[in-house]
Image (tube, rainbow, N blue to C red; front, side):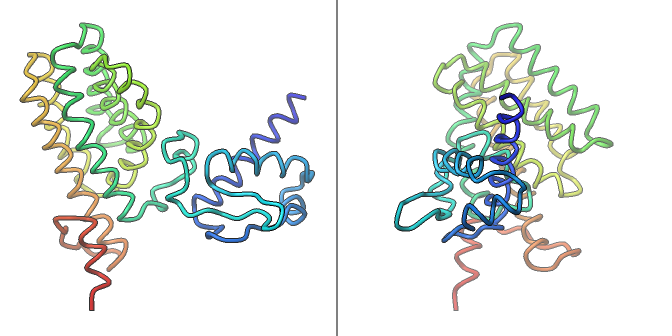
Length: 257
């Protein structure tokens, strides 16, 4: 039974990553027999995996239409597993713009609350995450990304708002996904460390207004890194590109006559 569950989990992850990467575009999906043959499993396992993906909004299943891959806007993008299936290569301008907007809505006010409500233990966790960032910034980019996400989710937890804290799992995955993209900028880690330290010091001296402003500065810096990386990736790989002021505006204007 355990072996069957492990096999089922592997198939769900394989299919989920294929959809998230765009290997299956919106529209009809391969049929059960084809998938079963490709993955070397039974049609029963495929059928159960498809049900799991349907519960996450990634596919729909109907007796007359079969299995169809749904567009990204239908997916449950706050499901940590759905986010985990993405890689930096899967992130486009629209998703980055949405992430920046979400951060601006949530993080400054969470930091303002954290400055007032954080316990000694909360502040120790935030400082420890910052110290991991400083020790990994130059030599271990993957560990730096994990520490960076841990820093931000620790600030969220220190707000002691139970509804905000419920967002930690999804936001942590979103941040790791976003930071894995922005970290491709050569200056990303070292240039943001002073801003993280400034936020930490604001929290430690219980200055909510300054903490919120420090978060805004961090997000501004992160947005510039996103813009630069996406500009290079989409326009002239290997060469620096000017960073646009608005990611979503850049995407729209690129289709203008």
